[in-house]
Image (tube, rainbow over all chains, first blue to last red; front, top):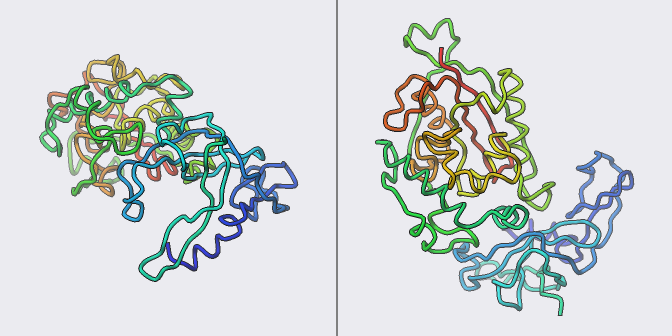
Length: 130
Length: 238
């Protein structure tokens, strides 16, 4: 992913900024201008709690090139208490322990390095709740 | 992740999914145009290398080279080209979010259901009228989800279908008589047309060793983006 695109995603990646529809209350991550549920256009910014629960998960054994060194690693669909869902890596644990129902915290982490130029991309990763 | 959600919600097992590959390879072994013309056993599938849990290598279709073509024309012109044309009686398209996080239920393919409903409505037919189907088995779990969304089995009951023989030739609703994406191969852009060609052959009684008896009505379902978009066509012999 080129840096400019990554930078445009900083509000969601750095601050977990989501949108809450003032019409129907649905929380969507990342924020959108139009509510996908009721099509309302009055959407306010909210920051998600930095915790959630695993809805479903997988362990990647054959990764894309950039993540070769990390395999096997767990990826999960995590739902926050606000009802928003996001896809995230689950780290600092045995990947095989990441299963539906697991409680996690979302922590600010390095996601990847871009090219040889040393551009670092940050975002959130999940870690099991102690 | 779809597979694990399905296992979690409905008790589908890795072995259930392995049977989809076993069944499709059984069909594909008899298709002289298939990429992998050989059978595989449940043990081989279950011991193949892990790609993304719970999916193993033999749960995954290949990415293939290939081409497919059909001749489309108004029915009253068709007799110029063949004595036994096949009619398209229903067509439906639907989309869903690409991101799994934005879907209602990660274990169900909404777009497949909606596209099927539209095709059934146009054809004035229902799932019970379909005698055979080609569905997008890019991964074994995809066939499980597709047969549910197409209405061949109840929601959540797709897991045991292949193991119980329901979707094999001779079963209630044979699925992927060509071998499917898994065994016939998945030349991505050509896959949808290749599915239509299999239904065409079947409805003309040219299905070879995998011929479905008295096949008159068949369905082809193709999708992209793990179910972000789905297209269903229903065909009838003339």
